[in-house]
Image (cartoon, rainbow over all chains, first blue to last red; front, side, top):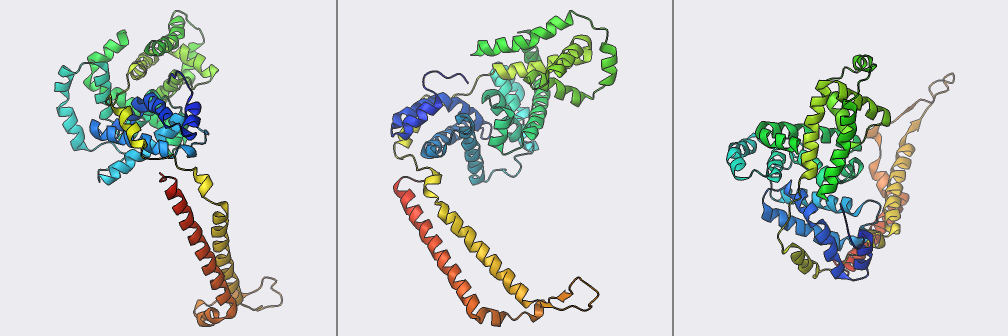
Length: 196
Length: 209
């Protein structure tokens, strides 16, 4: 996470001194991270954007509670995760099986429409996103936090309320499953990555 | 940023490539000692790729990768996943996203820190309330037990408690229990008052999350 200009702590102290506009720097800095994480829970971009906005509003309102004991991003991602779970509960979606792989029907639908997508979207980003979207919410979350959110195992543990060793095991398994999906559906693209 | 990530990945690969050129005589014995399963192999390789393994472990993994085709193949597979994840870009929300958030937060103020409006005395009061309640119950039950020694030789006292013989009516009518209940009710009302005051106060300063 490369940041330029003011540090998170400096921006936060300005916001706490009633300089509300300074918060836009926080939003700009983290919007893609939060949005990407939320997209792992809800596939609809409109819903994801709504939740991501809500995450920043919640973060703003409870900014005084951020004590700087963890990275700001870790704190923000914890809010994002909680917001996503609340959203899914409200929607009465299958939240009880957050630990499990998504239902067979959902997966079958994805897989059946997959080949057409490959033709249309050959980009690496699309390939990875498709592969990740076939994983369980927990798997995709761990991967997103580790690679995109650039969180350590301990930080992911804080966000997901898990022991770092459990996170490590989950990360290993998630990567294994991702590799399997990539090899199954994107063998050609995987070889292109290898050749880079 | 993407270039930096790419350089990091390349740096991880370079020592392996250097080792591939060398041959080590002690490798066969090491390999015999470490006939890992596929899962263990992958766990060790992921630790190596993530930079979580110790210096000794890193050296041994490098050697395994350079000399064992199975390890090398598995390492390359895992590196492909790692490389793809590192090079992947983040999803971006709409261009109006920041503006939308700023419009929404304009309606609110930053809520005061929780520690400021949760009075420690309230917490102490709740603790005292439950402690008094538990202590009262324990004292009452101990008072109901008939301690009777059945044998002078036996140093352990014999006692019996018959729950059916507990005189609840007497206990609830006694002055001491009435005072005990009164104290608890007053404590409860004080706590409720403090809670409502804190809620009203936080409502004036903006809602809490």
